[in-house]
Length: 190
Image (cartoon, rainbow, N blue to C red; front, top):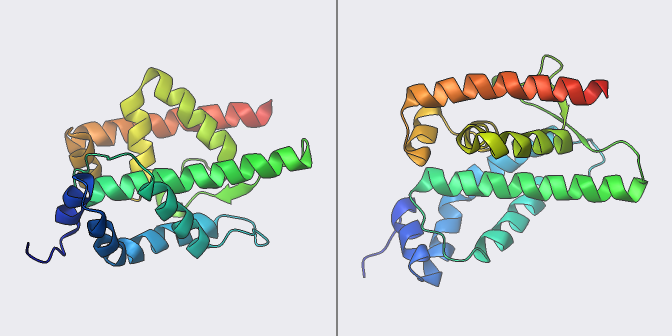
């Protein structure tokens, strides 16, 4: 068997049961995952106990336990990894919120490049809840936000993962941002 170094080949081998493919994949995608984790952590409070490396490690642990996903390509893997990291941070925020019994939830800054609110600071838990609500009536639109905002994928990469045109991605992205802005604004006023 030839040495595999292409992420897509490794992902396909992993999804077909080759456990060693994951070990070969990790060094290839580690830098991208760490950059994604640092982006997430930049928005967290300064005394946050979870660090970017720990977030990547927790994502790895969860990805290893994923039951044989049929990986499409590198973009699909990064999208799932981004979703996993978001879930880890939301779980952490919810746990902290429960511990404080009604205290403020962990707040994160939304990156300037993909700003959803004018304020540029949004509650991660509220954003996650709003995304879940969006998914109930338009799952693809929610996936576009997940991939673009949390996964850091380009319009073309998002288009490839979802198997839709770039124009559809742009339209969904624009509509979803407006919808989320309205939802987050309403949740702040309540």
